Image (tube, rainbow, N blue to C red; front, side, top):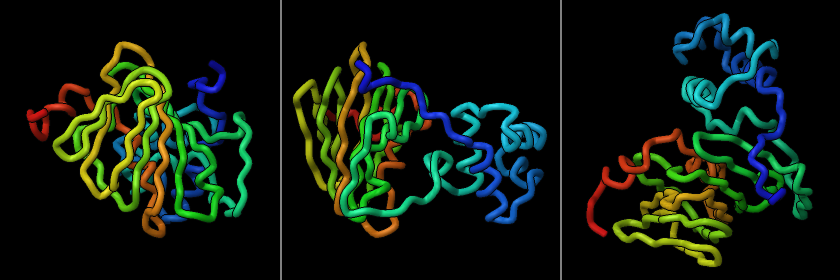
Length: 216
């Protein structure tokens, strides 16, 4: 299915990293200390001599206090009508999955549609997610277990779930195959990008499931 290709779009992460670092007046050595990476490695990334791994991008994002998606594009002009071809979508890889934006970053309203492609065992992390607005999830392929507060919902193809995003929630792919799910986040606060909270750092799913409560 071409719609769900998992290759990330080619972007110049090095140029973006340098701009973000200089914007914050942080030297390469300073960023190296904050990220626990070598100054030589950072220099090579910024000069386009090497491509950073996803784990390296997470270290850099944490060191700069930014979401990982910041590396994959500049601020864009907002429009009241957005038409996006499939090959124009921003694709951001993360452990066991890919995030694909569906144009929310170009739209004037507070709405974020995106598709997650999740390998078996992929999950949203150890801790639950809470943000403003509302969340809608539609399972396209595979299965997705969603926890909202203390209740669990198993979504299979054609199933949907909608809830207030102020409720504690998280998800994981409990099946043995790849899952594709469409998300729509809306009504969130000005300046908030709740879709970033769904980009996992790859916590193990068994830890994620049992860390808060064993009650189902």
